[in-house]
Length: 349
Image (cartoon, rainbow, N blue to C red; front, side):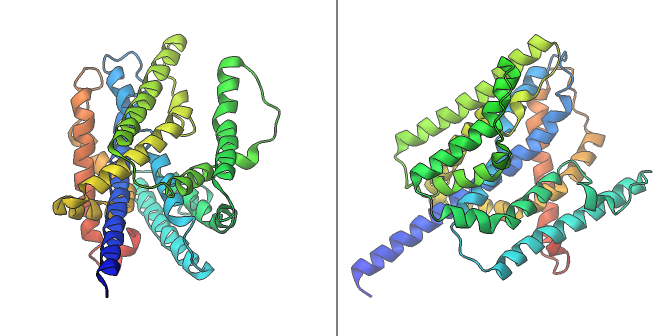
């Protein structure tokens, strides 16, 4: 093999490693933000607490978590070629894990006096966080349609569809909330999470950015977080109670914030790919992220029983991230053990 070919191959392998580590960093940050969201959300309704500002800050910062997962799925899956049999195996992994954890949560509730039926999991998610599993199964079933559409889209078609989607899921609600204008257009075909998939498919086609762009992505993300924070503060003050309108994943702050976060984290992942320890930690955490998502309410329940967060004082600025880190660490250890056991590993794919 010639020197030119070898150099090209080495360059390609380096680029792929950097690319993948960026995705690992996105998953790792997103799963931490999911936990932070669930920790801080407990105190959101207590608007008159002195620590509500801390709760609002962490809630605002964490709201890009789910959009990041959907954008990453679009980035990795829409251009992927796989047979229906391979797609079926992908879906079956999620179905098995969802059914298993639904049964575990039902058994947990029944042990604590609930009479919830095991058939409830067919009707609706049995735990507050399992909605994501139901949604992602539906998205995977729709994946062949999205792939068929995406392969014929140029950048302008991408932007047009994404723009219509943003108008449908975000613009209509804003007009109704603040201008009291009801839009009569039937836009229900756009009202789902598929827009995040298309955003991911568009972003994956971008090349490596220069350092000044990475700084702009970070600034953009911060500005969107501040937009969510101050808009929520203003709306809550006007209504005299906590109002989470801008916490919606379809909020323009969270849509654009997740885009900036995705681009920023992907570039940071490429930068730190030269650090071998960072590679190993992020790959391991990324591999465990879905299992952590499924398990973390158990860890959070045990932590809340032993270390009650005081939402009446300013200590929430410290306790929310510490509790989130503790929950992540405990869940990571448990899931890592489960993934090493041949039969049980199927519930933490």
